Each structure stands twice: as C-alpha cells, then as structure tokens.
Amino acid sequence: MASEEPAAAPISTESFRANRPDIVGPEVPQKPFPIHLSGAVQHGFGRGGKDLGCPTANLPDESMTPMSSVTEAGVYYGYAQVSREKDGQVILPEEDGRVHPMVMSLGTNPFYKNKNMSAEIHILHHFKSDFYGHPMKAVVLGYIRPQLDYTSREALIEDIETDKRVALKSLARPAYETYRVDGFFDLNNMFS
Image (tube, rainbow, N blue to C red):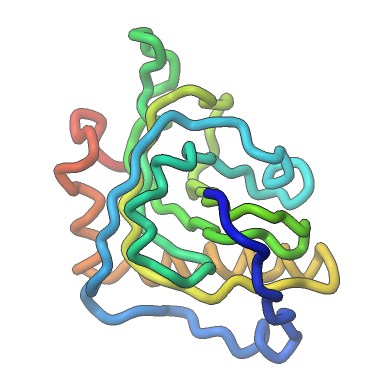
C-alpha cells in the first residue's frame, strides 16, 4: 500500500506497556467492522518469524482496499483462514486450513523505518510449513492500539505478545466468536 512520507509514530513506553487493557473494543463489533480481506499470501520482509518470533502472512496491496475505511495505522484483531489448496492441490493438513484468531499490523512499521504502508497478519496457530501463494481470507473485527515506534526490539516483542493476548481475550466474547463461522470462510474445514 503506497503512501506519502509517514508521520512519526509515538514511542512505546514502559508505562504504556504496563497499563494496557486485557480486552479492547465494544461487546459487539461496530462499524467499520467487520472488514473482509482476501488474496494470495505473498513474501514480505521476512522479519516477523526470523527477527521477532512472530511469522506473518502478507496479502497483496490490492487486497487491502477494504481497510481504506480505517484511517488509523495500528494493530487489529479478527479471524483468518489459509486455504489448504494451492494450484488445485491439497497441500496443508486439515488443522492448518481451519479458521484461527489473528492479529494484524497495518502501517509503516516505524521501528524498521518502512516508507510504504503494509498489512501483516499473524495467525495464532503453529503451521507445519509455509503457505506462500495459498489463498487467505481474513475478517478484521476490531482495533487494539495505534502504530508505535520502539527504542528496542525487546520492547516491540513485548507489545506483540500483549497484542496476541488482547486479541484472544477480545475474540472470546460471544458476538466475536460467531465470526469464526462467518460465511466468508470455507466452512468445510470448520474451526479449531
């Protein structure tokens, strides 16, 4: 997602990290949510899994158009599903093709000084192999926090781990859990 020169993101502080809520968003998703995204998973920067211990699936820029209704860079939560099939062949095991909770970073990743906007989805499931080129669908249901910059990789990792916990707790509410069986997903695989 191309963009002009990004504005400077605020720095994450110890105080911010210590005072984060466990659950975010209203009891029921509200506009502009849900937002439906889909596209083939493409290679990103390769930092998520290698540098941060948080592998991400990246959708093509054109897949992110529905997020244009959300103007704020930051971290979001919802559900995602990777197709077991690629090029007409079933490749991934059944459990990898189920609907799983996810967190998504939408922004320029100021810690890494990116110039362009990107969306990186971390699916909260351990995949047995990579799934580049596989179709993926995601339903974005809420907003966790703004995009921040960091003074250390450790502080960034700490916030990522908190984002995961907040996403899981926020999705555990009944109105959010119903989206695991949203008709947008391939429900032949059902959810885990």
